[in-house]
Length: 267
Length: 88
Ligand SMILES: Nc1ncnc2c1ncn2[C@@H]1O[C@H](COP(=O)(O)OP(=O)(O)OP(=O)(O)O)[C@@H](O)[C@H]1O
Ligand SMILES: [Mg+2]
Image (tube, rainbow over all chains, first blue to last red; front, side, top):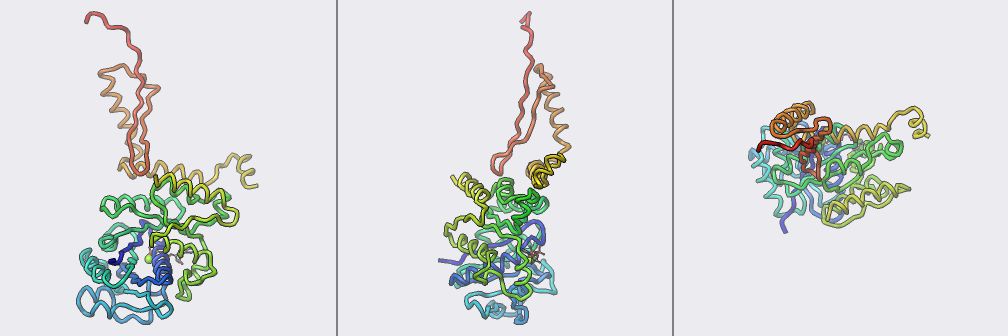
């Protein structure tokens, strides 16, 4: 079967696209799949750092597109996970250096030998975003439980549908249960109800994400981390496995509400 | 405890305000209709309908409802019962 292209995007910046790309990519590779992560945020290269591969870059995506190197030469293999590869973004060029059809061509070449191609999209609705969704078989929209992030996610979900790349799947990142329980943060169930879209993951707010980014070692590689587990669950759902949104420490009511909503949405 | 304090101080939970604000915001974003335009729409609709029927303006309800990701405009426009017409 040909590899699947999954684009990770958002409306608002800084909601956790790059973090999600690195972690879902690492988790899929951890399951034994052959994975390529592409940094499509041209000019603001970041995925290399989150994956801890920045020192091994020679060529980048724009070099591939402009024919200065072979695709293989721009792919950096992760030393910890043998089936995980990165194609970095160019740092000194801008988003106009590549086109949607360039992205399609690169991804079609990768589909032959790899199971999953994960594309890290820039924020916004401009050229960089169009480049990133052009090759997508599946689009994952990341948001935070916050008014402006939810609003912008809705806009993106609408565009993804209009481009016939839908239905988009939602990751709600940075849920802080203490704040939710105090009534000072939108619960995942509220965000889901507002956006009326399929849910693929809920990731807690966790300081350990910053620590793992400092080290360049995605938290999904930490088998003991709950946040890592949240990303590993997303990876399993990407492969088509039905992983329940399990009740966690006394949040039964909350997770019960979510699974009810999902069931209501899926029939 | 926080809930109790909120209740006696009459302050709503901020998550509830966020949700209510988003409900309206998303409807207007999705339909590309700025919030202020609903009043114009309402007035123009009523103007047209009033030309043909006797409308009970005080009880009119015009709103955008949503079902999943699609929206529909709902207009509930009660009519005044008219005196029987003579001479037709
Ligand atoms: N679940 C989380 N808990 C705590 N911090 C997080 C979480 N997810 C992301 N972050 C932090 O939020 C910041 C932004 O994350 P990230 O760079 O992944 O966002 P992005 O959507 O890719 O941003 P951009 O739009 O600039 O590309 C980072 O500092 C990251 O460590
Ligand atoms: Mg990013």
